Length: 356
Image (cartoon, rainbow, N blue to C red; front, side, top):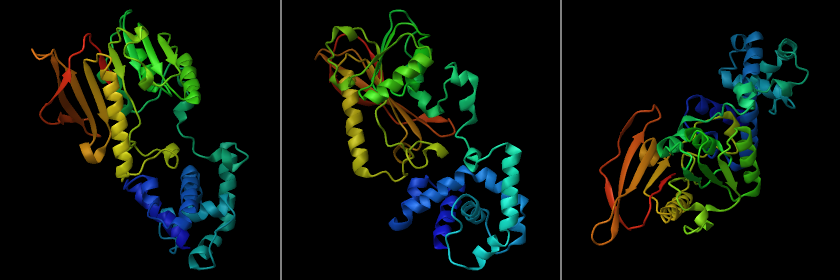
């Protein structure tokens, strides 16, 4: 029964928003970790149905041994949707088994009411909006607020002669956002080095009717700043890999993509080095400003946007890069992130803007 108590503990912490599922599961003994994670995920998938069955059967009202909603959820899940409750006989297991017939009857009733034949059809969908005709046709693109910051801050021009680069474009959400801001004018070069992700990028650009996008199956870091094809680029969007610490808990990312709150420091150092490499490479293309967006909560108390602005050099032929910042909380409020920090950089001709 301890296995079920571990699952209940995780569900309780998720309800209290005390972290991501991966971070919480890290405290579970390794031998039970995978099994516990599977039970929690499956329970969450069918939570709405299980709650309906539990309430209809009056399980919590009639059985004092079942002293929490989440305990009832995991036990009824295994009773109805798995191979039965995997625990030795005891008062808690017997409390559920006494209601087996009623629970099965209510479960069948739910399936009939919803017009489904298998329990798989009862699983909670990720987002009902995904079936909306506007989304399916590409007229509307779903994207969380935090992911909208980079393109909004970059603010590329909507001109026929505009030249813009999205350095790490796939799957294409931010690329399509840039395209919308540009009103499908000018040229937007979208880089993606991975072939499969590049294919996804092209599909999404076609679906979103982004006619000004030229998808490039190449690594942005390999692009020469002297390449005549990209001469005149004025804006660059950098969206390299990050820690993921700013991702809001979502059911579809609980196992595969949700990052732990306590991100490994070595990984953070490597990510920071890669981000800096991207920024430096962007600046070799005569970039005038760089916007860097970071969701690192521990370091910035929310979503942080820092702006590096290159100014005309002095008599020494150097250029000053001024760093300013805005800290944006999860509620959307912002405040000054400190005094500008001056840095020196050799002067370059031309103007460009880069954002990450």
